[in-house]
Image 1 (cartoon, chains in turn yellow, cyan):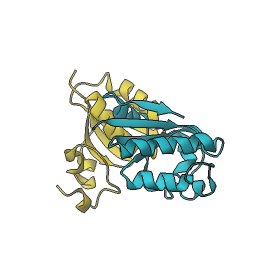
Image 2 (cartoon, chains in turn blue, cyan):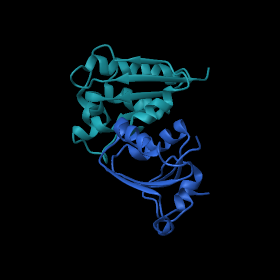
Image 3 (tube, chains in turn blue, yellow):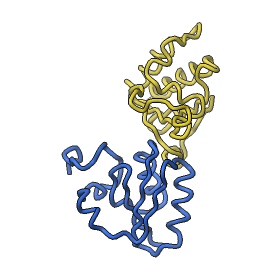
Image 4 (cartoon, one colour):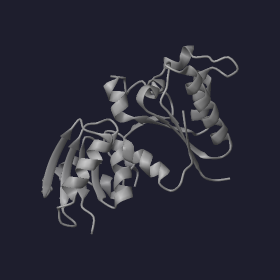
Amino acid sequence: MDHNTDKTRSQPIDADDDAFSRSLGEIESVSPDHEWDAGDMGCGELVFHLSIRLKPMHPGQLLKLTARDLGVPQDLPAWCRLTGHHLTYANHPIYLLRRRED
Amino acid sequence: MAGKFCVSLTSAKDNTDKATVAFVVANAAVASDKETMVFLSTEGVRLSEKGYADDIYEEGFSPLRELIENFAKAGGQIYVCSPCFRRRKLDENNLVPGAVIVGGAKLVEFLSDGSPSVSY
């Protein structure tokens, strides 16, 4: 898949391939199980609170995250690779995470 | 010899000696075929702005601007601490080549498989 041809993405983001397979329109039709607007929170604070929010969710449930910090496009895919949570959509500042299996 | 190498730098014009030596060591690492990353945090993030290092020259070393440029040209990565960058109100559209704004998880991922790290 050539990510550079996806006009819905504002910048290249190092995430799982299928994070780019949906258009913005498609993602708006998805009903996430939870939503969180993290505002300008980033770095360690963001992933710490993200971890707390994902923990009580059921495996496979979706969290729609809005996070505007400049580091998030790099940081969130890295955090998902570290923790096993799945980044299914990334178009800064909107992200969709699928909670990992326990 | 493959492998990673991290240089952590927390100084800029507050300690130009440290800032310069950090990039000298980073260049040594990248020239030794290491996947090398310089992590800029606290005051160090100022070095990620184009032009900031232009007047930093420590006797006995190459100018810092040249050291940073050479590092990026050789494939070195510069991770810039996002909250440190934001609180100093720097311009994300004016980064030096090789620099990318990251959060803590990106650093943790780089280090998590056993990268050595030296701090300045």
